[in-house]
Image (cartoon, rainbow, N blue to C red; front, side, top):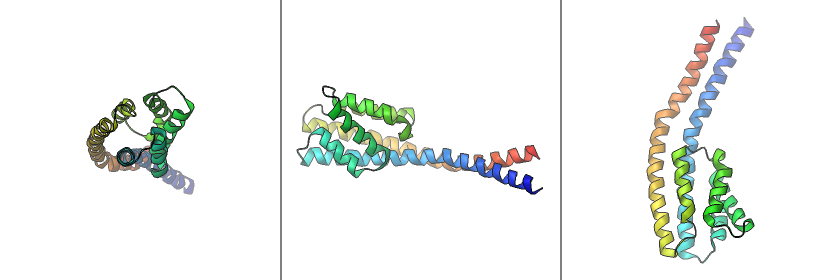
Amino acid sequence: MIAKLLGAILIVFTAYCYGCSISAVYKNRVKRLEELLLSLEIFKAEINYGLSLLPEVFRSIAGRVRGPIGVLFARTEKYMKLQDGFSAGDCWRKSLQDSEGELELDKDQLALLKKMGPVWGKGDKNDQLKQVALMQELIRQTLQEAREERVKNEKMWRYLGLLGGCTIVILLL
């Protein structure tokens, strides 16, 4: 009897943890988009007030922003130094491919990040700032959608995990 009870508790707990892991994806998406907005603010400040080269700006962003977004900028900076002759957009695209799984973003959000590639290093200072401001606005809209999706789905997945575990236990009894 104790073995059945422990087994049932283990099943419910495992199913609940699975639901929590799926709900954490929604939370992490919001966090990544917020980190990306912070990164673009740092980029604007570096371009507007500093005379840094693009790899130095990316290194600065990577040093200030933690997590996968910081790693994304660090990889881009590394590729820009190693891949002599490639554009900043090519290096951004390659580092995005390397970071795709860590970012936990959906395909539309990743497509938005891919659109940022051609922006890096193109045009003069004012053009850069305009492009970054446009990207910030698009990311803010995406962030709002991600927040709404998080509110809608986060609790649902936790409850589905718990209820799914209870259902499995009931079916096994």
